[in-house]
Image 1: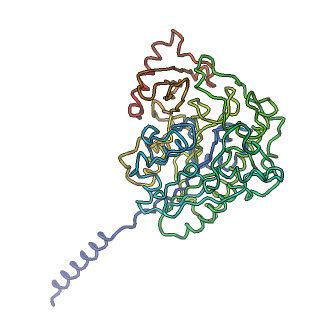
Image 2: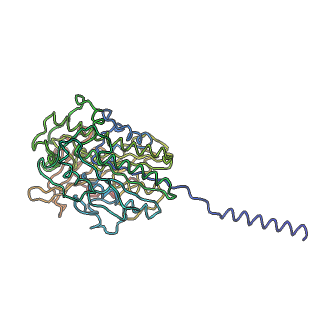
Image 3: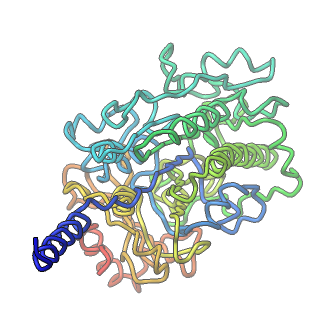
Length: 496
């Protein structure tokens, strides 16, 4: 073989080697894990929301590493409709879930839920605790059967007799149906010197931490959904969390009165609270309000400590650098505002909810945005952050651009709703939060052209929504504009 032939052979061989290297499969970047934390009945009264009187150091850790959404709104301020909307990425009029009994698959039998979507894209999806409401489980959402440990509701000897009745609020207990009526349940609050694991949230945190250890050994990325029960009623937390607060320093509500000019059915007094022993059917006196607030705050701190166990385990397992952490409360909550308690309204107190997210490698960790976002936006956001395609049925908008630019222009409105039966009328209150206003139309559910009442609150002058100014003559044009905007709906409120 002459020298020229040898050179040709070496040249061809080199090309072949180069081509094989060029066409070799380059490993795809590792997809992020998702730690998806739900907290029941949590209003945005936390350290990271400016509430310095609340001890929430672990939720505040998420805020320091990520973004706090100061104006995040649920689609309906009650557990099941809110959670069904979030998990399907659709709104209550699409899920047909406006109550605590209806499963979203009755109206949407083939809908792909958030967890199901990740599962279909090779994520290991696991659910622990309260993600869906009560017994309204959804097996297709999970890679393995959903879990929620059983636990006592009360710890003090005098309250133990109420445990069998109270555990009906746990999704795992089917022995009895929930009972409703004045003082028919146990006490509304309890402080007992017991370990965290006495109650459901402590057990949920332990189970979730153990699951993180198992998930860390899997080759596929994970989506772990963890739902904590507190601060949902009854306000039961170990004594050490009560001890974080001085009762003498707990402030009472400053607007313990009905909104002036609002229809009576806009805000109800709070029958859910009256189910518990010791709660009067009428006005709640100041000393009792202070005890209830104390219990609510202690329950927040108890739930916060359980969140901390998960964050600590992420760090210990060295998972934090590749795990998106999102925390949300399913709706807000009233603590005596407007002479009312609990949720079940279209007010700012009930529809505005905590939402925090941290993403590894964020450009601007520790920021807050006032952009209007909705819980229906969570599904597309997490999908986009994980590099997944967006299903066509979604009715929200990914807010991932806000993580890079928290101050950029965004949605012009967020939408919520709540049904009412009043005076033989079957009504739906459709509510819209814009930059400066809350606007609500109460319409006949069968004929939306029939308006029963209108509410308008100017948040620049009335952030507590104490005065309905819809009937003021000087606001006639504004009401017309907002009516048109509300009827145009969410599709026309998308960011440009």
